[in-house]
Length: 419
Image 1: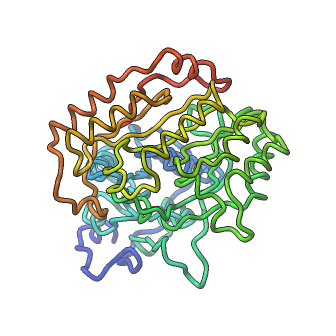
Image 2 (image 1 turned 120 degrees about the horizontal axis):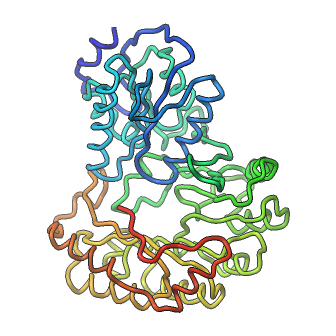
Image 3 (image 1 turned 90 degrees about the vertical axis):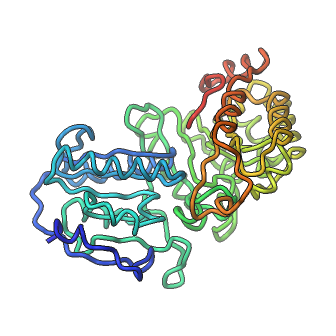
């Protein structure tokens, strides 16, 4: 029985690609009350929306996570150790709501470290990413296995894993639609676990992207956000090979919806042709989120980013010239290993002199499994916290704020910070 099997130790030979199998009980009643909670990024939220859509299609009822449910799903994040801990806490909280409920852990934590999750007795099933059908079977207790996780960086039967959380969806409480057109990442920045959790970079073929946009148009949506883990890498895996600019030109030619917005694009992937498309297109919102992470050359090199401050400065300058009213945002990591006073000062000066209109500040946190976790020259936590406060206190010129407010699609808050 599952309740007994939950307390068994996961054998050392169990792994992400060869998980242990335990036998759960079967015979779930229908319909079920299902509660889902989500940690982490917009892509995780997108995946949750996909799961919710399938659950509704199969006749289940969605309830808030704080209420009594038959099944609780934790769509986890593993970007930091704290995110892992929060995921475990949510699983325990679910059992307190209803001790007889099934608790399912999915998402990046389940994908990267299923053995750790399996040691949490409150978790009944551990379902990795890209296994939506298995997740739905776990909801109804139709799985014989407790742990189902596959290696998303390894081709099976000669084929790279596809993208199963696909569809044009809306997040709960949102009026604009989101469309995931890319999954996974091959960049392997030293601070990031995402290439291991999300797998190889995979793109949705342009034909399907356009079909999904047409579907959204038929439903009356006025704006669609194109999302992905590494959006700038769109199309590199397709045959024939295309790129993000090519896709945007195709969207602009058809104009299926009034407005299309991009999520994050790295500086070295913002080409002159992409800038021209953004400037000339009638459907593309004048907004770009450009995750710089640092403004110091040494730190960017240690992060294994594909650009230096000079390139980033040039891209931002030309973007502001080409799109004078655009909202330009960024992500910044403060306190990365090796960031001394001089490195931080250069990064801060870069930010102050830039045409950026908003930024998200992330205090560095060690993530086991990344290259940066092995770096020895860690920055003390009090210094990291102080630097984060200093960056958040930076005010931008009035011209930048006007540019933010002038964007035709959305006003972005100044100094917005996501931790």
